[in-house]
Picture 1: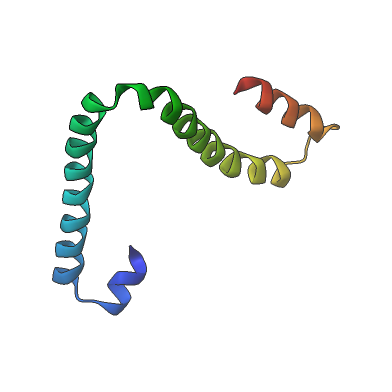
Picture 2 (picture 1 turned 45 degrees about the horizontal axis):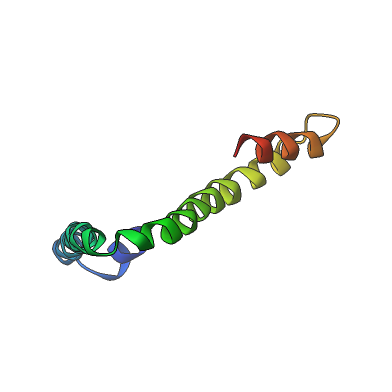
Length: 85
């Protein structure tokens, strides 16, 4: 978002941010109505969504663990992180 401000004017950045926010709301409403018609697909889509969230969390936490190698065994921290999820 900050690099937009360096290239575009503030008013245009605010308008673009609003448009992106609207697409999120519209996507949520469309997804809600589509989910009513394809309830069987939720069983297959839910693990992919959960995996995406775990991936995001892990890619955020693993560099922090590597940066703070104060423990004697960093692999133990990775093990606890894996067991946690």
